[in-house]
Image (cartoon, rainbow, N blue to C red; front, top):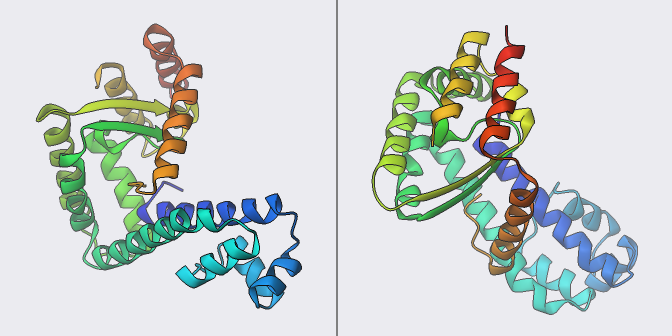
Length: 243
């Protein structure tokens, strides 16, 4: 299934749940012990740690206090608010179709100077061809049952990419898993066209500790990635596999 804004929201909530688990384990507490310390039923700890229920500000403060990790509360609260606002905005924009969703990112893209993008399943939006974007957004629209404005959404995405890539002072560092080259979006001709474009083409995080973690992870992935001729060889091999 192709990536969508909703999957990004869920991924953000799952990341928060994982971060809640860490101070509990560092404190050597079981779920039952943490629940007792926070004055909750044990089931609430399980729901929070498995991203079934999004935590409130008070939940996070109680959690961190029970774990003796009060200094972690501000970053976690910031992360939850960011995920919540992402979800509310996505639901609001999605009801009117995918075109407005594409356009909603323009202000963020225009004020961003350095893009560090990691993709594990699909080609980043700024590099997508018309055919690839049409197939991808069409799949997302059908899955979520949004109004069918795929053609307009594709035009909005391509226009946004053209403005960001070719205008203004923007720098890009893009890391793609090899699986992106193998995950077919659209038919073979569409995928081959996208891969040819890669041969020539060129989760808005606000919590300080998360920004540092993303930068650290990006540096590590950059270190083990392949570039230049080696990267082109991988793309060409993926193209040959479509024949």
